[in-house]
Length: 393
Image (tube, rainbow, N blue to C red; front, side, top):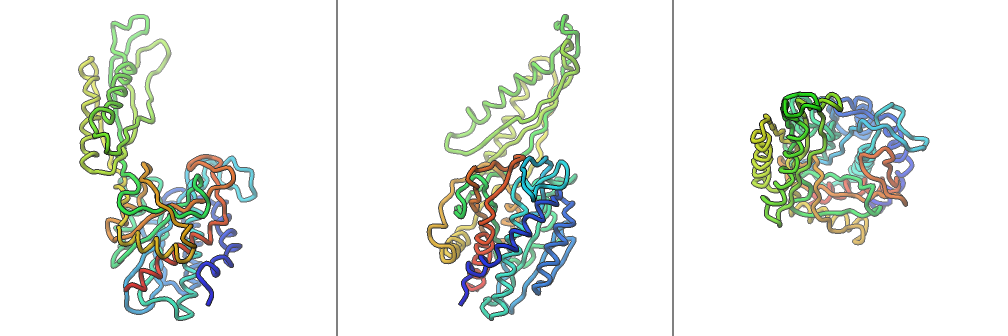
């Protein structure tokens, strides 16, 4: 009997070709029409029942095999507004847009998993139940209503009736072929900070006639840094970061206004709420120094919290197909992921799949790339998780 991995390995050329085609034609969040159409066509040809336009540009595809649980497998599809610098034949053909996070590989691997599962059903080896593929738009950004692709797909019923959900993310900085897993808190939740500091403009030669908003903002930023250092228990993981500041009109004029934005990262919702209060308090220094401050918070993705039982299942299924050395433990990390939204609707597990080249690359960088030899491994891992969950009924 052909193993899942043997079947996936034979798919290497097709998965590589698909990944490179998607890489050449990247699409930003909620604009993934070509990517979605490609995925929908490929899995429809395998016998999946396909629904398009889910969550605006997403695809839901079901493979039924009698009565049993419904297991969802997810791949995000969107690219990033980054100009690619790689000199490769499959480099992006779209100016200012590239797959700088590996979502092209995610789509290729989910198509690979679909191929494996459809073949298993043909051979009578797929346990009873339904496999649901989620080709998800816009993981990287939210729309004008502050809703990401996962949130939009949930609104459109993509998770209705789902008993378990699994997903992965390639890690271009991690050892190729290693599946890095963890039960419980895995990736952080996020909150966007939007702040405005107002002073009073004056000539730089007569600073006593104004109130410099840049100086006020500097005091506020320093106060913000104490929110984690002095207000959060040392054992609690949290980050507060101001990543953008903009203000002033000329070198010889006191700035009347400064706008800034940043992020809060957290695992515990009580810590999140405390940080919101402390950041707000930090900007009170602006008022004390004669200016005015306004701070707003925009809740982003919740933390990724992997279900203990589903993570144990995934670990066993992947070790049985890729080998025990392919599975390792991963510490929690502070990036955020909207797979967390899916986990609020069904138990499941999300994990990293190492994909580093000889020179590892950083995500969201213009030279991002991966070792494509991991494509069959990711397809196998996803298919194995689905089959094992179906098998357990």
